[in-house]
Image 1 (cartoon, rainbow, N blue to C red):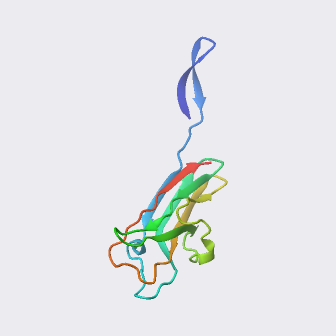
Image 2 (cartoon, rainbow, N blue to C red; image 1 turned 135 degrees about the vertical axis):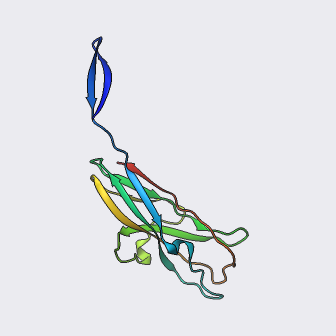
Image 3 (cartoon, rainbow, N blue to C red; image 1 turned 90 degrees about the horizontal axis):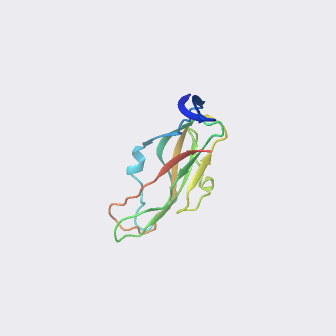
Length: 148
C-alpha cells in the first residue's frame, strides 16, 4: 500500500491507496539472431528462426499486452528482406510458416487475461531473394509490454 496525505472536508488525513506494479519484460537474444542464413546463389527458401527468449510478467488482474515490431533485414545499397514475428510458449515446437499472421511492417501483439508470468520464444520468418546481395545486414526488433 502507498500512504499519501489527502484533504477531506478541510482536514488532513492519511489515505491508503493500492500499490500499482508496472509490468516487466526481460529479453535474451539467441545466437541465431546474429547468424541468419541468406541462402546461396540462385536459391532461396523460407526460414523460421528463434531470435530471443523473453519473460513477461504483471501483477495486474487484467493481464498484459506484449507488442513486438517487425520490418526488414537491411544493408546499405542492398535489397531489404522483410520479416514477420510470432511467439510461442517457451521450449515449444517452432512455429510453422502459417503461424505468422502479422504482415511485415506491422506490430505483432500477444495478450494475457490475468496476472502472472510467462516465458515465450520469439521467432522471425523471412525469405531472402534468390540472388541476395552479399554483405552485412542489420535489423532491430523493439518489444514493449503494458498492463491491460
